[in-house]
Length: 87
Image: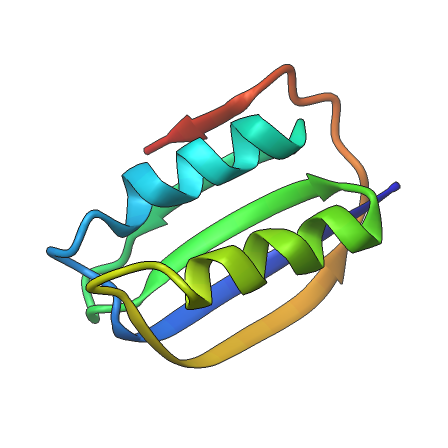
């Protein structure tokens, strides 16, 4: 199990990104959060198996109305999250 901090740039606000991310994360059993940033990006922390996190990102990239131009990511230490939340 791993935890990643992700920052998404592109057309990621005002297009249902956080709700789509929540739906995907819950379906994959990931924990963490997603939130809008003031600079127009969206940040997320996701915890789960590496292949599930890759699937999470891939499904977001394929979502209608969302256009991801870049994903910055770095590894984090694991946490005891109970669920995935929208902040």
